[in-house]
Length: 201
Image (cartoon, rainbow, N blue to C red; front, side, top):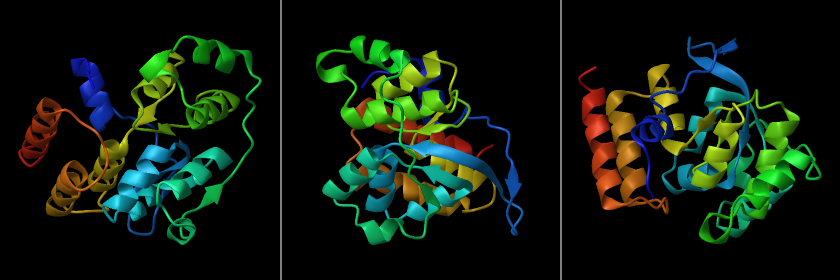
């Protein structure tokens, strides 16, 4: 997986900036809603941090994503505490068909990715998209949307007081060593350096 410098920062959440809409009782801010792909659900479940998704008031979850997450080992009961809505995306949108045609082979948009893209388009790309898929990320960002990966979700919770520096470092380390999130060794080293830098900010 190869990233430009800007993509690295964006993928980790350093450039994520969405105006918050809701304050929690503890003073932390949450984004009203986000569209969720399978990757963050799976990877957060694998490290025991699904509760990080509470930084969003509502998660828009296409049925295909819910089904894929279940097939990959995320039990339905693990999602019951989350505020979920399951809208039906418009897969016949010309923009979705055109986007899908641009990718071939290993970078092809998968069926669940197409559902997420269609849902983002239905929302005029105003809701952030949660995904670890590089092809989907580039497609959403090229349309003016905001993408947040699993790292970005963990960092957003930390920045708004939902976890301590030690806790987010432990979560990120589990993400690197326990989860099925695939990263190259150089990128893993980059992530660890960014986490060390975080403590010096």
